[in-house]
Length: 193
Image (cartoon, rainbow, N blue to C red; front, side, top):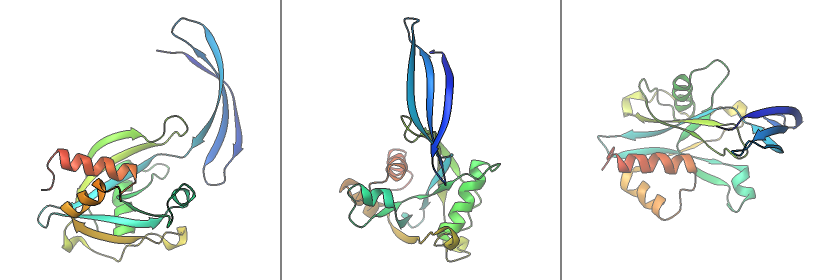
């Protein structure tokens, strides 16, 4: 296990999240010390959940504009995704995903099943993503959803059959990593048929 000594941490940008330049010493396997410098994006941790209805064999996804995708080859900037969001300070990931599901979809979900934890981009970001499955049923719909308008969210809902969703995945029309991971998990585990 390598030994690491942080020598300097300098804030170099960011209003919403923090971008830092970190200078550190890393002890390599042969025992020598190498000084390195990296930029680290302190994004905060996040949650995501695949909403599925086992009786109708449907998936509920969201669509919203994502500026970074627009800047990197997505002409419309719109992404089809699972429900997701950032964990607030002091909030448990399970509380967060239930809150995000309600805000984005209007469904009040009482039970979620954690399936994974994953670093989203470990070479540049500190974000740890908690991934969940959650059943939804029509009687759980308590509001319109659509996101939090004050936070600039304009979220569309897209309910579709599991088969259509898998076709979109196979045709490259679903390009969001967390969504791909959760859909493949659902397929491998036979969550829906």
